[in-house]
Image (cartoon, rainbow over all chains, first blue to last red; front, side, top):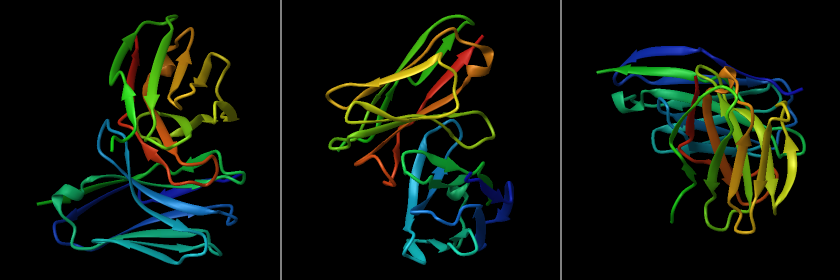
Amino acid sequence: KQEVTQIPAALSVPEGENLVLNCSFTDSAIYNLQWFRQDPGKGLTSLLLIQSSQREQTSGRLNASLDKSSGRSTLYIAASQPGDSATYLCAVPTTGGFKTIFGAGTRLFVKA
Amino acid sequence: DAGVTQSPTHLIKTRGQHVTLRCSPISGHKSVSWYQQVLGQGPQFIFQYYEKEERGRGNFPDRFSARQFPNYSSELNVNALLLGDSALYLCASSLGPDNEKLFFGSGTQLSVL
């Protein structure tokens, strides 16, 4: 049974700091992994999707890496800004693909 | 192009009532999935529909049901509401049924009193 864990649960950093969010999953036989951003009470915004054959994906100040063998993914945010304050979730589809398992998220607060 | 749209945005119901939530996927997307998110947790899978057929169901009671229409929009129905059904209900659309990138709507915040 696939389980997804995100550490830390919450993080507070000063503006401008580079930071890393962690995601781990128990079943390494994944097809892809997706990172999302969620603002309070809102829906999820897709940030990056990494296919199982890829090691990294980049979008602007965001870089996501994937290590299937160790069951880990990281989301790197460069030069953090107050507007980056949100909850970040990672998610993987289960075998069969119709169901996606989410971590509980990391709540990020960037102080101005 | 419009993204995934959900209605209503907020809803207040009392215990025992019935509720219907609606979702319109991105144009061209044929798969719709429903998720329930309780405060402080990640979304939990409820249903997936593809080409009007149910392809998967999560660990939710039979009070939860859904359907997909010929235009690929979808409804989630919940009967006999309980206090514990209070949550953010999210709809996601994707091109196909398996392992596809998910696009989410803004959600429906359901409060059961």
